[in-house]
Length: 264
Image 1: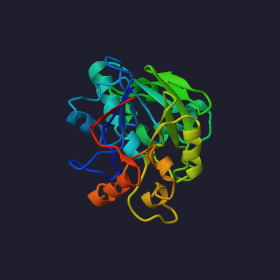
Image 2 (image 1 turned 45 degrees about the vertical axis):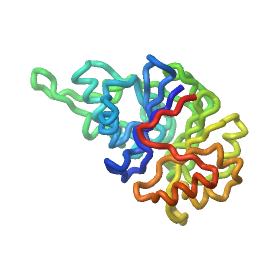
Image 3 (image 1 turned 45 degrees about the horizontal axis):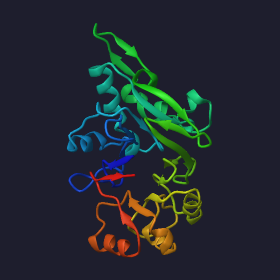
């Protein structure tokens, strides 16, 4: 399995420094790649890698924030109008509540219907469309592991923003990915005890204060070194300094880098 970060930054990240924290996942050479999240900067980040929104099989969404979902507009439109195909969309069932019947949020009603709900047909007439016209939807559950394009995937819930369903992933049984989350040493211990060897973890280099919805590095720095050595930091702010990153490395952490591939 190969992971390539389109970006390792925050919702505020801007080129040329960084892009939103989205990842291309591939089971192996020649396999159909898919994205963990497709945020605002994903199309531009793909372009920088010599790819486009037509060059992957689908997207797995972790939660509904713009740096994780707003690239779906270009992805859906381009594939719908240019290639006449539906991109695969793997959704935790809480993220399409109107279809799944599970209490949560709704990516179509809350995020995409405004820009994508009506299209113009070839004869000039308007046509109302839905999420399923653009995407081939598969629901996911945290208690039901599945295989996505040759990769074994398990979901687990994380705390991010109150009342906002958010999920992390375990890939191939030993690679963890928290997506956006508040700090929890218990969660880290649980993942390592589950067999996770490498854990990609949300981080923000700045002060920890009540109301922060990301993990501050000063919080992560409190865990034992033997745990830190399993963790790769991601989703960090553009203004992080080289000294801050080097201090994290000296403490045992690794740092994910944009456009770099990690093989497992």
